[in-house]
Image (cartoon, rainbow, N blue to C red; front, top):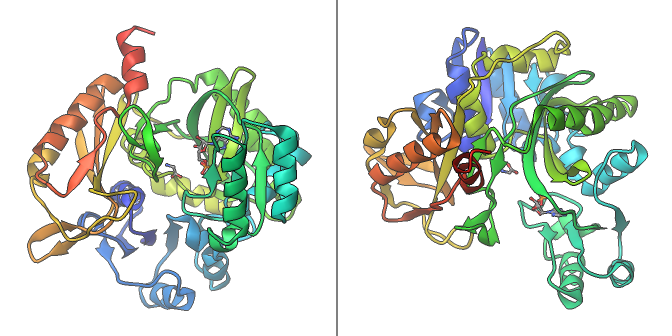
Length: 427
Ligand code: AMP
Ligand code: GLY
């Protein structure tokens, strides 16, 4: 098959790496891609927000299957447009992608279907939201309804910070995303990233992962897109996985079908594992980044037939196999990230780093400049490794990090610390 992958981050490099090895893949394209993806696929400089241009490319290159990486094109309806033009596409339609695109939509769906999540209310005016916050008291969580590139969730320290967050959102600080606000209960527990492939009717669980959202060691500092991840997540025991499927994922799939917007694609549930069991923090309508980097290392089965089965409504009898090894990825970011950072610094040592046993380096934001690889984003590299446990995967990943010569970059030094501590204490 000729396959087109849309996106340009570390998630897409991991997907491209896995799909390039598929027996079904004849030719793999990626738009727009990056310097690392160029090793697995032919990168094409398409503007993926220009749907007619994407469709023309598919026609001209006899594309058989399109796989969409990021949320923005999903929420913009790229799947609807490609399917309408006759191209099989992996990912939810615009209506189904509302599970990520509107937090209020998801919360209402949870309430209507008894799906465990934080208690909440939706607001369209600052006054009403502030009155509710005063009534509920602290702690509380304030969320912009729409897509806000990871900036839409605020956990305020006190009432005045809560009111400031509400004023900021309704004041247009997050653009359209903040025109509606959700205020919800703060849940306490351990977080996990849970993924299920869905075909509109059936769902199968993928492996679990945990990411590190804060920029600094010890989970301190501002939130980021994710500074590292590892899989499996110890909290996702077989029992917790079963409960997540039965209490959260499958009721969602049934509800979306009943609503006339069947969900096809990967459903990424951000979970809080509480004393009462798994509760939904939020949904994403796509693979996680950097979680996908560790999932793809652990996936033994061919990915392409699984993505096709999801698109074709054929997941019922489908099964995926996983390596028992653990995987861990360390994100190397440009100095300054998640604030302002510079592009263009030269990265050396990638070849030597990639020679460390079990290591695979996925590029998140790079481009080639002559014969050099240079940084071209905030999150730039995902130094990833397999190992017999998280401790070994961590040691290998940091050994590879040590071989990378990039004065313009930095990384956290403690990715996987919870799992390493668990393994050390023999739990
Ligand atoms: P999100 O952008 O929705 O993934 O939220 C970002 C982070 O905020 C999550 O990973 C959680 O750490 C935290 N968070 C969001 N909602 C809640 C909640 N209701 N209770 C506790 N933590 C939350
Ligand atoms: N790593 C979290 C996300 O992809 O949203």
